[in-house]
Image (tube, rainbow, N blue to C red; front, side, top):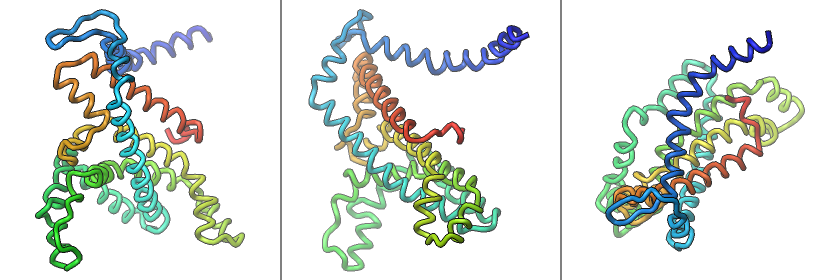
Length: 284
């Protein structure tokens, strides 16, 4: 009987296993394999070699690019967490009507009705030298000359990242907050806790799974993004995604694959560290 159940379980899991193997495991295995191949300017040689990894770890550019990637990810994470937690808290605890909650939540999703590229490049005419932001500041007498750092800088890159990925922080935090038993908050107030103490000692600890899920979403998206950095920095900045994109454009697939493998391992390490702080399986 137990044997039949075991066989039945395997048969039920077989379709999903095949899909995961075909669309996840096989592509990753292919990338890892190609990362050990050799390449010249005109051809790719399917022979085992460590030269791609040797060149990658022996170049100062690699470390600078990874450092820039971590910088973008860390700053974007901090800003999206601040905005996302604030928005989620307001929707979950200050909006009593479920209809209004849904309406405001859908309002947050309106930017996602258009593509990422359109939402990203919409900042360019706003932040440009003769854009709306500079023109308004000059008209108000706050500045005498246009601010050059508003566009094609780290500021514009991070601004675009925050605009693109804040919702990925709002959704899991809001979902977690809606599951909090309101009697716990009432009990905290009945025991003399202030609003700040209730937030720090009750709401934040119970919201940690949602924060971690949002953190994983934001960090992985930012670390793998290259279009945003390219357009919003005017090709003056680089991250790991752009490094991979440049190698692909030059048909240096083994080098791009090696960089992708290192990036994947880095992201997995970051996720592994985050998962040690909280068990998010309750939210999945």
